[in-house]
Amino acid sequence: MKKTILFIITFISIIGMANAQKSKLFGSWLLTKVEVKGETEYPYQVTEFSEDGKMLMMGMEIATWSYNKNKHTIEMKSDFDKDFNGEG
Image (cartoon, rainbow, N blue to C red; front, top):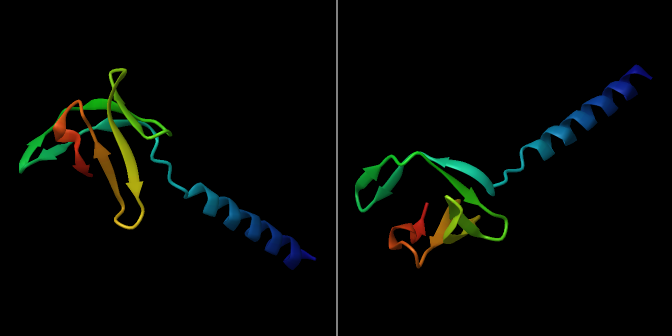
C-alpha cells in the first residue's frame, strides 16, 4: 500500500514538473543587449511580445515575430525600423 501511494505521488510530481518546463515566449521582456552589424547597444527597454506575433515598444507596434523551433531563434520583420529585421 505504501509503495502504491509513493508511486502515485512520484508520478503526479513528475507530470507537474514536466508541464512547468514549457516555455512561453510571449509577454513582457526587458531588452538588455542588441547587436547590429557588429555594434552592441544596451537599450534596457521593456518589449512586449504578443501571442498574435506582434512586438510592441512603448505601446507602438514595432515589428512582427515568429519562433523557429528548429533553429531556436526568433525571426522578426519590421517596416518601422529595418534594424529589427532578422533573427535573434
